[in-house]
Image (cartoon, rainbow, N blue to C red; front, side, top):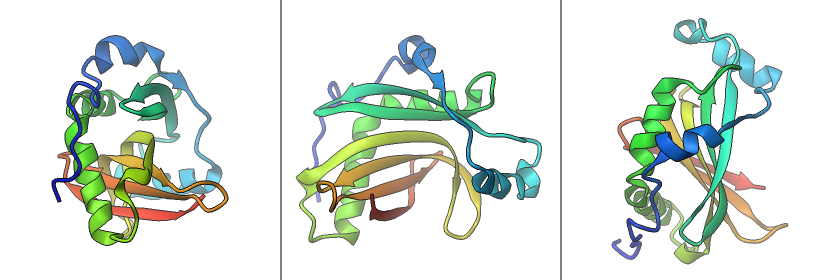
Length: 168
């Protein structure tokens, strides 16, 4: 499984707080259905409306990878900015882990054909309806109209907690 090697220098963003934080722009809010799911959880009820802050970066051979950080209408949440800072400076480790994880569950697909499209930091709705702080690495596999997207989910400690996938 050690076929995935990523050079730390090319596959990290070591200065997220200093250089990339200022580039985050406010995106549109979640739709009504998604907002209802987030707000229906008792411990999350104090967060009335989730907003996404977005920027893009070239990471290795992947161009314009979208980086999304959860926040409110005023700014990204500091908890997730800090998580982004910690994860992005070690991104090469998580890329390798994510692609090995996908290869384990989908062995027939060529590993080199994945394109990193999005890195998201925030609350994740897990398959068992639990909400966890963490991040996802979203990859596109194949070409449209036969393209699929796979999101590998990690908890805030960097441990993979599952993936989801489907056609684009």
